[in-house]
Image 1: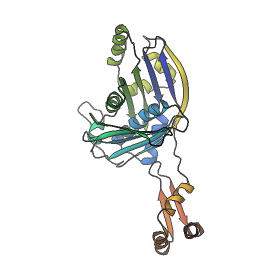
Image 2 (image 1 turned 90 degrees about the vertical axis):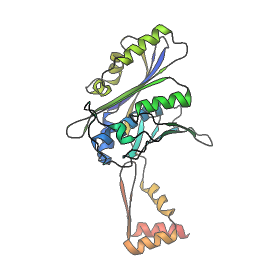
Image 3 (image 1 turned 120 degrees about the vertical axis):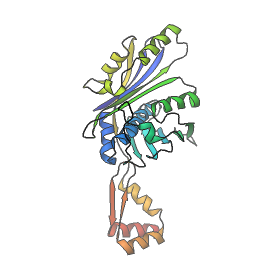
Image 4 (image 1 turned 60 degrees about the vertical axis):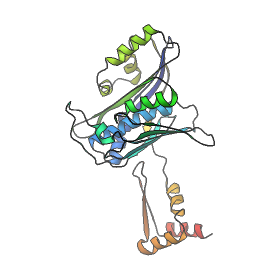
Length: 293
């Protein structure tokens, strides 16, 4: 089981969100059959999305991240609530690129840097809040940190890691977001910067059986970390046959009739989780009746 925590330094110098997302990212990889490079890009986006969704206050709030840097993998889209449930997909899951000279996956090359990251927060108001900033590196963590700085004037460090195993499964995934709080003293800021500047590869911290609380306290051993809350997280789609049925109804009578006459069945596929729904026979006739009423 994957878990996520919300924590604070007891001196109130910074707040911390941290998630171990290995199982959720592996579920996404299996559902979308992604290459290693795309697994890393999608996994980082899902990992960040979980923590960003956790920052929202209400159960029905939803946060959508749309990343399109003009690179070969196209758009990455993820939707999350504040209960640790996320879904997401990538436009071109089969893109693969050579490793970078340092042996790392070329996520930035796959995402591209000629585009934007857009964050939409639906918090129950008439219109959702939408913020958009230019993509800087395509590595996702830095781009989300820049989004927080430019859109919300919030100084953040976003560290994300996805380690892909030799069989292409996800060996480990996780990350954290650190946001400094007002009135942080110079001495504490310097100490925090020192910790963050000396990080190993992020996925290394999650490539073990340690609980996310243990990882947080090890990483920030120089501080007195207080865990405020801990919740489980998962890749979970809210698609259903009823929702797909509503989509078919929206096609209209003429188009639906033509499909029934030509194929006698319709298969719909959810973008977010690749779940397939087959409509044929009486099911299709009942949908048609519904339109005609």
